[in-house]
Image 1 (tube, rainbow, N blue to C red):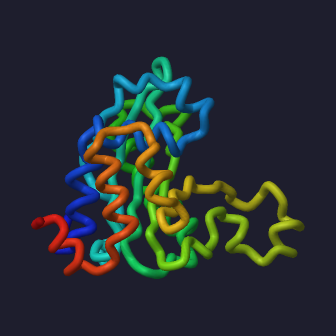
Image 2: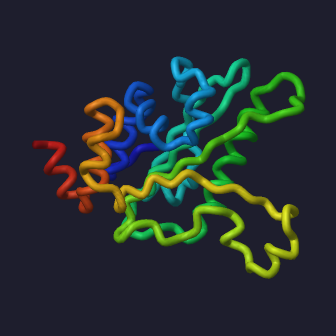
Length: 200
């Protein structure tokens, strides 16, 4: 899926390695989940789920990890454009459904449960993320209140790099490569600048 965008290449090269992804994921996920899963089972899954037309501005990676005998998916999307996507909760839901559909197609018997997917968005949008992070934010508030639990609802994990300081990122547990990558993704805006820094 990777194209000529250097942000995409850097994201994919770094975080497709479980040893680099592990520290970042542990820092972003709810503590209860971090403590419950077996991080030694963290494994990159094949495939990408982003819309073909958006592959110049988004990159994705899918990991799986075990919670006892259950599989949990961790879906990581990097939004490498200067403005945040207003309908990102809907877009992420579409990608999650694609993951579930592929998983179901791989099963020999019809399961009674499906694996949990924890969606994570990394963004370096100018000025920080100012768009919806939860499905209910996309509905008219009056309709959402009246319909209650009958509307789909979830919230993705947001890593808003624009709001993090260099010290915040450098203090994070993780490999040197993972920390350097997040610093570059946060601080380098133009493709030409990133290419120059990566070459140097």
